[in-house]
Amino acid sequence: MDLLRSLPIGLYLEQPVTWLHRLDSRVKLAWLMTFLIAPILANPAWRLMLVAMLIVLTLAAAIPLRVWKQQMGLLMLFCILVFCLSAIAPDALPSE
Image 1: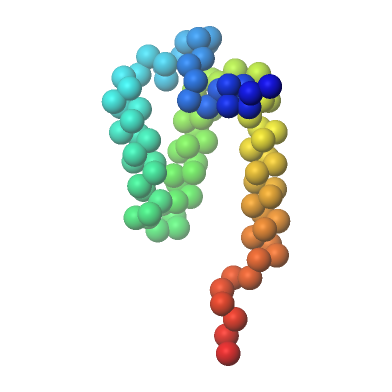
Image 2: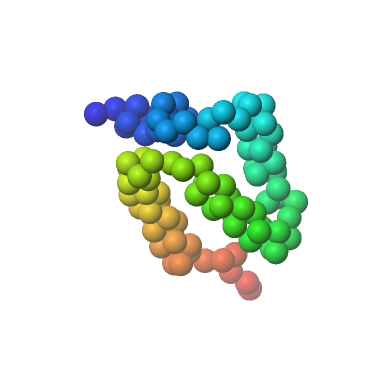
C-alpha cells in the first residue's frame, strides 16, 4: 500500500463540496502564507488566538468523518512522539 497515495493531504476530495472548495485558490494560498508567517512575528496571546482560529476554520470546513479517522491516528502518533521527546530532552546546553 502506497502511503502517500492513501493520505488525502494535498489531494482533491470530491465530496462534500463545501465553501472551502469553492474558494479561490489565490485566497487559500494567501491564508496559508499568513498562517505560516504569523507565529514567527506573534506574541504568545496572538499564537493562542491563531490556534483557536485554525481550529474553528478546520471545523467549519466540514471535512468528512472518514478523512478525520484516517488522519487522526497518524497525527496523534506524531504528537505523542514529539511530546515524549520534548519531555525527556534537555532544554538547553548545560551551564558550567
